Amino acid sequence: MPGLNGVLAAFGLSASAGLNAYVPLLIVALMARFTDWIELASPWDTLINGWVIGVIVLLGLVEFFADKIPAINHINDAVQTFIRPVAGAILFAASAQVVVDIHPVVAMIAGLIVAGGVHVTKSVAVRPAVTGATGGSGNVVVSVVEDVAATLLSILAVVLPVVIAAFIIIFTAFVVWWLWRRANKLREA
Image (tube, rainbow, N blue to C red; front, side, top):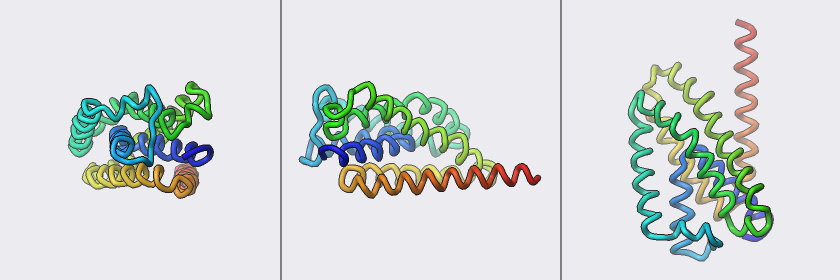
């Protein structure tokens, strides 16, 4: 994925990490290990090590179940505030020769910003609204939707990065519109 496709894939993968840190890491690790769709340069090729994949799976399972338990999911989101942006930075920098095309520090900062932005939007705007509207009962459904979205975004970011770029633009526009609408309703009240 040279050039623009690599950058688009990097944005898609780091956005996905904002929803779930471990799903895109696992998808990139498995695709790099078992296919020729992703080729990770050093030091990012460490992701294909069997032990690293095992740790990602273990941490992913812990995060999956922690995010489904009421009250624990809020603690998990607080912990993930540090983990998801770092995962986004790693994914952005590791994605398809982006390190060669963009300075590694710039790539990691971009990944931090994208993953952190998605995570903050999710944990500050979306999750509290769902908790308030459903009394917490909707959080499990939203968590599953986030996991599915992270999986699909990660796969599509590698396979069809232009589609992911379009999705990120549409999603960002939707969030801005939703926040604008919410602010107007609060002003009217």
